[in-house]
Image 1 (cartoon, rainbow, N blue to C red):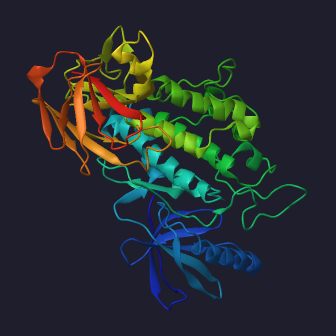
Image 2: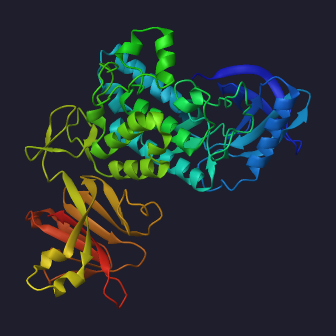
Image 3: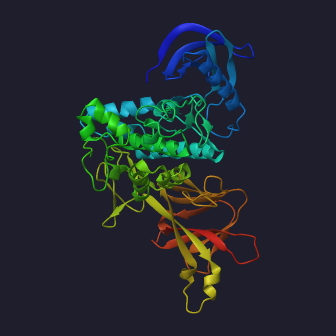
Length: 484
């Protein structure tokens, strides 16, 4: 998507505020989105023909303005363009410094193709880490919308805006006039020859919507999100394999309608792909399982697709276990995968040592287990399976719940841990008190202010950090362990 200067035009909203339409950001089947003379304010003008369609659209915008979307990263309409002649639209606010995800994806795909498959541009624009963080935030926003009983309806990279600067991964949704009550038809869907109205962007619509068999729902949002995620991570569309790439336009139509296997189908390789980044390179098993669940079992049975909460929790979990390559000529981020007890960057083959990255494990500590005869002190620690990595030069925040767990997003921040060439700097947050020591030991150090661990104290033994709780009754506590 490229910005275009539009013919100078001024429109007026219902509060008599005038907006000059400056640049066109994008255009879809229902309207065009433009920047205005006001920084951070966009206007969408409806381009549909027919007074009845425009009237219903304007009524829907009024309904949308009343919905409780304030705590979601959605550019909600704040006023309607006055209903006169053909002027029907709305104004919305969008934070500065954002770009369409479509442009981000197109630039990456073009760079990989023209460079013969080199991931240089992919890495220079944030690599795996930035893309996974973008997807985690996008999934969490959509999950929040679904929790309010609504569906987005027409999710595509053209409607998603992300940070321009590589160091950031903010995400906002614009063009939200297709938001509707979940499991219902969208505001302008019409029955035609016994089929549901089609509201989708080509390539991103769920098969049942493309085929006119169903209206938009949270499950059609899940499909659209999964397509965006696959393309952002690998540059490949999940149903555009070599067969479709080298085929006819009808082959592409069949692919989008769900008539072909997805490119990573476990038993049918007829539509496999030979370009882009391999899924194994950018996704660990939990994420690959969600893609398989969505594009294989969920292709014909929408109820088998992961929910947006499932996507959000998995991407949040994955974003917190990435490793930074310490090769200055590479600077890639990659998944924490040990091969032959070695941690090797898949982009440059550089090996990392445990002095460059720490691997935090989350444990549930059940003191009641110690009342069982013949148990060891370490038996009270139950590995929850949740992890966090801490790269040298970075800081992580430990919360009440581990990343990827259902309550992580809203849980309380407990302490921050900074890792540098001198060792660790551990800082309690919110007035909390902690204990730290070797796993299974009764000799624990209590602290409620910044505490340091010098690098020369590292003995490659498991240390645990535990918050001191005030409850008198025995309970299961959160513990965080790492090798030091």
